[in-house]
Image (cartoon, rainbow, N blue to C red; front, top):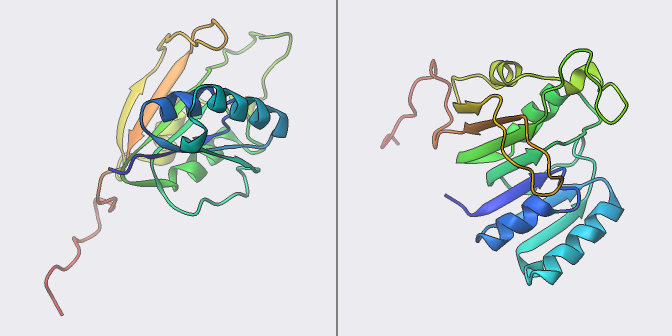
Length: 181
């Protein structure tokens, strides 16, 4: 498995820097230049600047140069529906790689920070699982997981992990011919 990771919607770089500190080569992408500046300072302060490549881009149009062993997104706010965004970034996972999605499940009628999140920001693990499909993904979920978010001091609400099999072939497809000329 390749040790290259993509942090999609990296913000101020907490996950990108953590991954770099644990041996990953990271491409960290965000649309906000101010957040990327903070992220780059954070990586430099930790002696990890050489392990992270920062890119200012809109993830709804950006295309990576290669696939990654890990694609992760934590609380991203894409300018498209979350389900479409997760489908888009799932295509950037290398065979045998992992897609890790961490988000907050918004309950109907509950406000946070004084506002109501848009409906497209309130997807469930079941929505994500149905959207990506189990025929080409090994799916592990932790609905209701309450992992501590070290950046905000709050609890994370949902975690969903998908692993793309090394040979991401739909179940109904015949196996490739081997040794034939």
